[in-house]
Length: 504
Image (cartoon, rainbow, N blue to C red):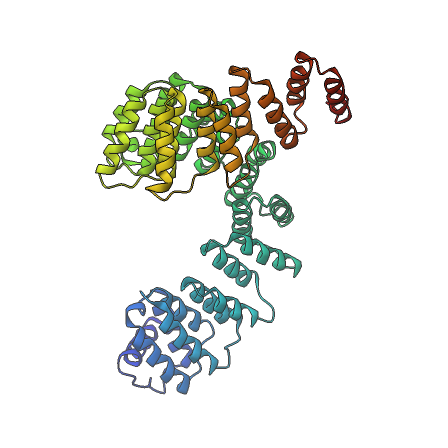
């Protein structure tokens, strides 16, 4: 279209939108459609939505609007504060037009309903499509993901692949991300193989999503294979690997990669540093933690609660509660996670009085104690043997704060009571638990039995541990020793035979 014709078309479209005056007969209908689309692309109609609907009604009487124009109208509608009424009007308008079943129009409708939280309507629109395109499948997958329904998103993806859909880079990335959220390794690996077949595995976005899948599923060797094959590693990929090693119990590998990253000229971001600090915490490596802190500006730790929490946690668990306290006091935004890190750190280093005082200060500031704060307080009691205080916090978290204890809270209490020699009370607590005790809790009671030489209760505990961990030969050996020390040779022999049959 020439510049003059372009200007004339623009004027005609503006008149159509504002006044409803029909374009003159010399203006080609295509020009109106093109300009209409351009205005929509520029989002100029978002604030003029009522006029847009009016224009579409007039336009439908003159020249059928383009199936390419209507999706832009839906996009404009989706940006309104309340998109649903306008979207429903457009949906109704589209049903009167010959292209209402066009996949572009239906996909735009699907996305609009998804944005409004109307997944049922989005699914219904999708079901109207005779041959959904990759874009349509991806829109439905994204709709479920945005609603936090990742398992259903993976289910949609499986149906898509079963129908013969070949993923593009964006689709592969989204499905891999959904699989990572629900740790669905089987589906995720199938998608990764498809990505390799389609030649899109080299995309940094697709590869990073696959890497994250393997990290979330604990498959660090496979994650490293993906990482090493990446041609262009960005900071997100490096951070995923460093954090993955740290969260999967491989702190040395995390720190090696963290420092290798800097040697290659890549500056860590806050997420990389969080992973490195977590690794230092696990190793008790205070000096390495201080080195990790040096790669970012100090203000970044004080402004970012995630960074600040990681730093407080590292300092406290490495025994430097003074430095942890300095960070805590200087932080500009202290959310409940920051408070909890400080309280837990103090409790684990035997500074229970300061931890208790900090919890009181937190309440006075208007924040409500949550289950994690109580876990920190109970840990404080356990590390210092404060049975009376532990009982008080455990009882009142339920009675005063209406918080249901998690298995970790029970674990703290059983450990506290067992260390104090209150073995029968600890055993009774385990039996009264509304959830099944795990090996950690029974192990805490066993530790108390060893300290206070209660062989009879230890026998009972070990039987429970053998039931929970039949592969753990150490439990068989300890129980066998109890039998031998009490002269129960026949029982000891039977147990050794049972252990041999299980391959121990």
